[in-house]
Image (cartoon, rainbow, N blue to C red; front, side, top):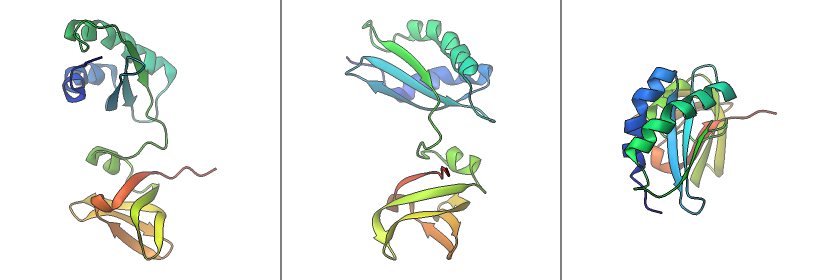
Length: 151
């Protein structure tokens, strides 16, 4: 199944997302399942009613955009999940002051996993406050940065 680029689909859907009061945080094609999944979020968290409202709002416009060039597909709208990796600057800024975990490609000071409070994000990288002090990691060192889920 050939589909339009995700960036084009997101740009097309962003005004609708704004009207519904959600933010598109990611989207992906699953060519094997012939599906398009749009991941959304909103301040205060996402509920099933909002997910359904957004799905209904984009269903018709997406048909007009014809993201699969006439091929059938399944549309899914979903929460990205609590442990989704941060991908954009907005993800980092939204979670300043919250506990995060940083997974590295290669060990630094003998460790590939750090936990701490997200202090800043910018050109210098990702800075967290750990029990041992502040640590800054360049983006290219980070395999995954996400909220710390404490159980």
